[in-house]
Length: 111
Image (tube, rainbow, N blue to C red; front, side, top):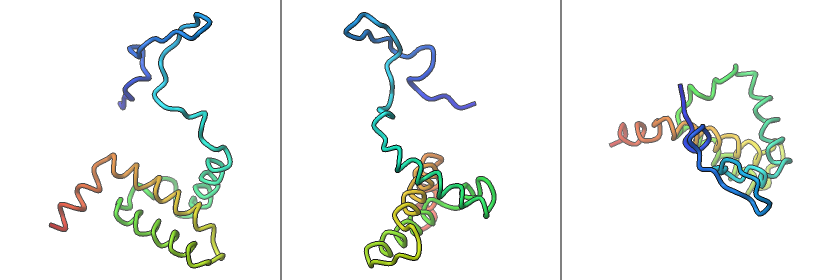
């Protein structure tokens, strides 16, 4: 079972200017741009052709390479795909894989 530090019953309690008390938040999620999050979700939906959670079977390094391919294609002016959205999605995957240790494993395997 996973636990996210700062969101459980032991989270710090803060009080606002009106005297309202609540747990301190760990992230400013209200600042995320809704259109960007929707774009990410749309790319994820298109990726269902590979099977749900298939991305978890791909290394962090491979996700980063694909992200860079999309970034450079966007910089070159290629318009046949939503390159920035796909790069964002691959970076999302890479961060998730980094957090499970796959990036460190890939680096050690190359040494």
